[in-house]
Length: 303
Image (cartoon, rainbow, N blue to C red; front, side):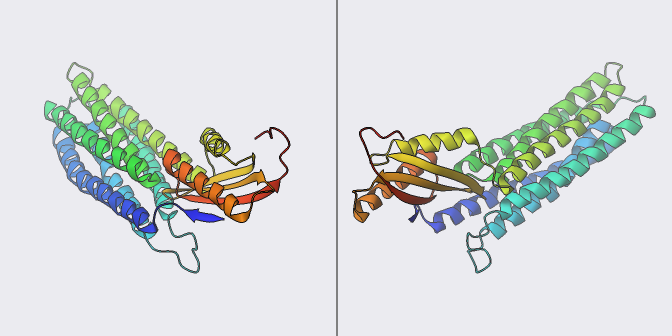
């Protein structure tokens, strides 16, 4: 039996809310990248310039997320019977590739600067610019992480992780610039190197999560929790098999349960409805496919 708890319209509304977060990231990155690249050039700060370059490519990554969210809102068609929800996961994967490319470029430029160090220390204007940008990005991160959790969106979760990484990168740039004021000009270049490492690490995390979802990976601990929820439903004598996968901002569960063979169709149907409602209430999962197997119940059947 198939049941959908909740409505398709609600899911599409959630995705539309995610688009607001993507637009917020795009606008913020445009403003901050322009500010950082300009100030970084004028104050001769490698760290701030690297941070600005990072934000410039984040614009492309955020656009990819926005496009993915737009595509995922398309209704099911004859070629996509489950809808287009995975488009947002593909968008997150593309964003990780862009971030990898930027991180490697920043690392390369930092390495070149180490070989030919700049003896001048960046102006403190660059440091205060980095602090301001860190605060702005953290505010954007808080907004997007709350939004991602509310609508259960992998793409927005990736965008939020990128926002948080950018906030930390700006803090690192501030530390490097201030350190350069105390007779350590190479510290600014070292910070640029660390910026590159952080960018690559964030890209790897997003790549890992996206590929895990696209290959139908699912956290086993969460699956066992869902299984226990089903076991606790009255009338379920045994959980014979259970699988789950992530489909964009949805989680799909397939389960085979054993029920008393003496139950009629109506009674079995009531059990499936109870299971679906419990899974939706406790795990916020709207798509559940339940197959029933009649079994003989002798005494206390082990679930």
